[in-house]
Image (cartoon, rainbow, N blue to C red):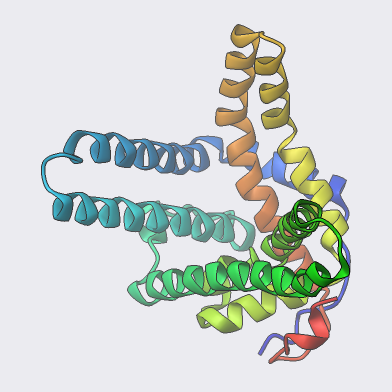
Length: 262
């Protein structure tokens, strides 16, 4: 089914260039969806604060509602960008890009798998570090090393399997299958994905540095620029990177986990 997938790398400059062109042509539509995600995220926090002492059950219900709304808008954004990549000449309404109920359910289940994998990786690192307790090395040293290695392992795992929503929306893959395909297409591409993330996240880092240097006004304008330009661009760039990796992948239609870990 996925015979168009091939094992490859992609050029970061090419991805950024194509993303910038597409974002410029459809900026307001893409930015609107990003803004809706921002509003939903902040509204959920505000609502949780306002009703935290009213009713716990209502708080949980509202939290679930806003989470599902955020997920739905996020998936709609992916679906809309896929439409632009596949059929840019024909306009499509944002409403028509709403994900199906099955896709939303698969995404939620995929998120649960995602979190279980992240926790599992950290537990494995801790278990591997446990025997070193008997070497006589002081516990704080072992603990710090284990935590450091665990954080690195979690980050690598997060990058490798974070493309699973694209498979759910683009190819309607089941949750666990989408995680396996994400692991497969990112094999050999981790460095370039990391570089892409560093380029896209550079303004966030710059904002934190400016705050640390006590330049809050400059940091504010950098943050505004990031929110209105970098966030929409990032969504498009990651989608194009996904398509680029997919188009040149030569793997099994049912990739296994063991052969795609490294």
